[in-house]
Image (cartoon, rainbow over all chains, first blue to last red):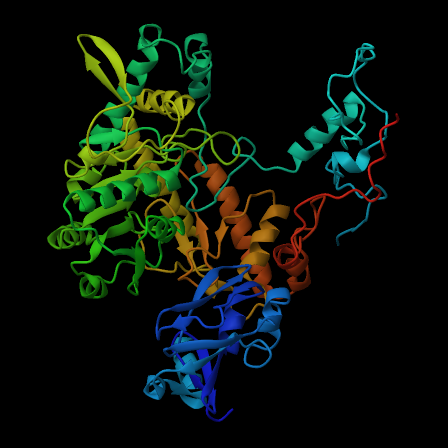
Amino acid sequence: MSDRKYTKDHEWIDVSGGEATIGISDYAQDQLGDVVYVDLPDVGQQVEKGAEAAVIESVKAASEVYAPATGEVTARNDALDDNPALVNESAEGDGWFYRMKLSNMSDLDGLMDAEAYAAYLEALD
Amino acid sequence: MSIERETISGARGLDRDEPLSFEQDAPGRTGVDLPPAPDAPDRLDGLRRQGGIGLPGLAEPQVVRHFVRLSRMNYAIDYGLYPLGSCTMKHNPRLNERLARLPGIGDVHPMQPQSTTQGVLRLMSELAHWLTELTGMATVAMTPGAGAQGEMCGMMAIRAAHEARGEPRKRVLVPESAHGTNPATAAICGYAVDSIPATADGRVDMAAFEAKLGPDVAGLMLTNPNTCGLFERDIIRIAELIHGIGGYFYCDGANFNAIVGKVRPGDLGIDAMHINLHKTFSTPHGGGGPGSGPVVFSEALAPYAPLPKVVQRDGRYELIEQEDGPRVGRMKGFHGQFGMFVRALAYMQSHGRDGLKQVAEDAVLNANYVMEKLKDLLPPAYPGPCMHEVLVSDRGLDGTGVETMDLAKALIDEGYHPMTVYFPLIVHGAMLIEPTETETRETLDGFIKVMRGLVGQARAGQETAYFKAAPVMTPRRRLDETLAARKPVLRWVPEAPVAEAAE
């Protein structure tokens, strides 16, 4: 958990070994309300930092989920296809979105750690 | 003290839940007495239907009651205030309906020879004239079937104009408060959508907009007044900037009802704009009638406007359906939503130019009246005054445990269709209220009283359980919208297989 980084758009990214796991923050799922559908990128797809990588649909809204870094998708969380509620139940755990191989570790520079993200949320309210 | 009672029938007073007609099926029951089929040789060559077709057996009064009961679960502008923001649910004058039913208009066929349809062609020509005059634009494409198709028509014209110049472009700028159809239109026309953030006062962030301009930008799609119910005061500068990089300015005219007769979009530098006849010009919508979204074009885009168009030649009206040139292809069959043209022109002519100006003024006045009367309890999302609709966030409900959705559901128990909720997305727990100009002050006061009462109850904290369960006075109580979205049941399936037809 200690290495987890957050974006201003409320995605999280966790790097371990050469692979990163990406999801949306607990704050984001709470703001969205009941999630009803998640459109995930395909394995092998290239995603680009700051560009749309996934789409999440709740009873309130449909929102883009941006890639926090550039790289190639190596896995997607198939469990979300049948059970999008996982995002509400465990946004930062079982409700992860996809895994990827990072092209540049430096993409992570400038992202917030958990403490900085908490302060960022504080300022939003 | 309230007396609560679950009825034996499940009905709520004179309103009751109604099963599907299929669930009321009594095989063999029928409302008509048909003679038996004649004993004729089978010429179907083995293609005769093998099983039943699954139509329910019902008596005539059952069918009549079924649809009447369903209709009582509906809400209509003819029943009460319909404050659905961004949708402009206003009165549909009966005069419009009467004129649309005149035999020479209601019975006309689109394939009649033009020598017999001079009157209706003239009607289309006059409506086109009113639309171009009111908007200060060069021409109009009448056929688009509603706002979203109008947007597509406008963006296709912009694409065609760039292609004709030999410089196709890639990006379209869309403010983040835009109607969802705007980015969808740009995307389906092959453009990348680039979102422009809003400022703290709910308008286009000019610095961010300027920073996004570049030679690959095809144009801008902007709604004015915008979806926050606010006039984009920098609109002329916005038009100059987008023209400065060779782009075009598409305006979503959904909210034209707030400025009709007051401002001409052509004077603001707009190149294309659709007009929702079913909003600004009072033709029925929302299940009551087809939408209609004519698109007006500036001189720059006029050569790309799709046909057909009506022209006057030697004192005769003529429908031009084909012509050489760079025009966008046909958007819709025949003449477009002609029945809506009749109603819109009736509305324009019965109001006159001064009356249409008053339409805009009264729509804005009514929205500001609602805003002022609610603002101590439900503060506006952005500082006022607003235009034709008032946008509030859920700040007024902070700490109550009651959310925007709960308040909307409680409004149903109070006899009102809820306002628009959770749109635009940039405002937390948004409630968008559009009273329209056709409501009396007494009607507005009734709605305000209910809104104030409900927010007061929510804040008092004693009715939270009720709010979470609302509506409770309807034949169906709170529907599980989440389950409906996660596991939609789109097709009724009989419990037992349909009986095989008797041989």
